[in-house]
Amino acid sequence: MRKQVSGVPRIVKIGYRGPKKARGLHPSGYTDNIVFNINDLAKLDSTKDAARLAHTVGRRKRMELISKAESMHIKILNPGNLSTKKAKEEKNEEKP
Image 1 (cartoon, rainbow, N blue to C red):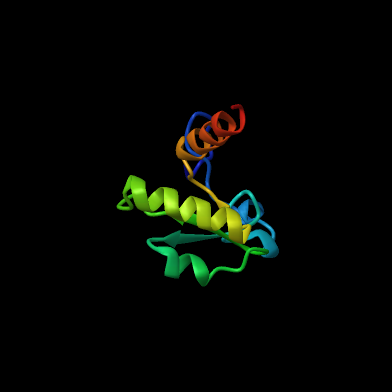
Image 2: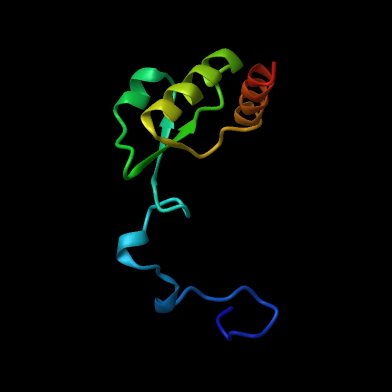
C-alpha cells in the first residue's frame, strides 16, 4: 500500500470525502433514524427524516408503524414485503 502498487487496496486520500451537505445522510437524501415504536415515529420530520424499523420490531407492530408512517408522509427505508402485502389486500377489498 505504501508503494501504491496495483492489486493492493488504495490509500485513502483527500478526494475521497463527500460533499458537506450530503455527509451522514442515507443515499435517498434523508437522515436515517431507527424507530422502535409510534412515539419514536412522532418525533420525526417528514421533510428531512426517514425511519428505519428496528429489527426487534415484530410483524404486528411493524404493520402499525408502516400505516402510521404513510399517514404522516414519512419514508420508511426498510418496509420489507409487508407494504406490498398491504397494497395487495387493499386492491382485493376494492374489487368486489
